[in-house]
Amino acid sequence: SQQGEEDPQALSIQEGENATMNCSYKTSINNLQWYRQNSGRGLVHLILIRSNEREKHSGRLRVTLDTSKKSSSLLITASRAADTASYFCATSTGNQFYFGTGTSLTVIP
Amino acid sequence: NAGVTQTPKFRVLKTGQSMTLLCAQDMNHEYMYWYRQDPGMGLRLIHYSVGEGTTAKGEVPDGYNVSRLKKQNFLLGLESAAPSQTSVYFCASKGGNQPQHFGDGTRLSIL
Image (cartoon, rainbow over the protein chains, first blue to last red):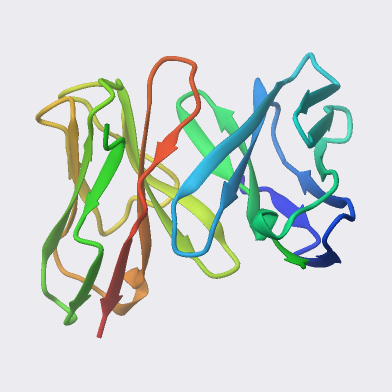
């Protein structure tokens, strides 16, 4: 399987704190994407980082990519209760996408 | 603008029964995907399509068939359902180099 892995599997923080989750993958990539999944819903795209980029920001999100270690991290700053969800990284090879196992984030009000 | 719509949302089958899951998108996307999501496994790609009339196998295609007769629809079929196919099934579509758009899933239980 080319499926990646997120770490930690679960994370619980207080509102206002920062949340960091990590993703490791197995193959060479063109880009890496992060998605959010609210309970009982489909995945929603958050941010894409290309293989030649090392860091990318979007609002309260910061993504880093280290292709030499085949790893990426997602930082959510100043977390809110509405950020409670599962977060997945995804890589692609050709037309196929490979998702990680996900990090379940709980933000306590 | 509905995006990606999956039908049905829930279904319970008996082992050996057959059924078809329907995915419809109204964004004129070329690419469509079927995934299954199991606890602790993330999403795994079953089959995908790069355009009308084309299909290809993903990571876990066994026991499933697909068809893309119309650009907006992507059908996933289970010919003889097995308990191991109990899962949540997600459809996604995308256009060009854009991110995937997902439906809200079909929860399928096979007894």
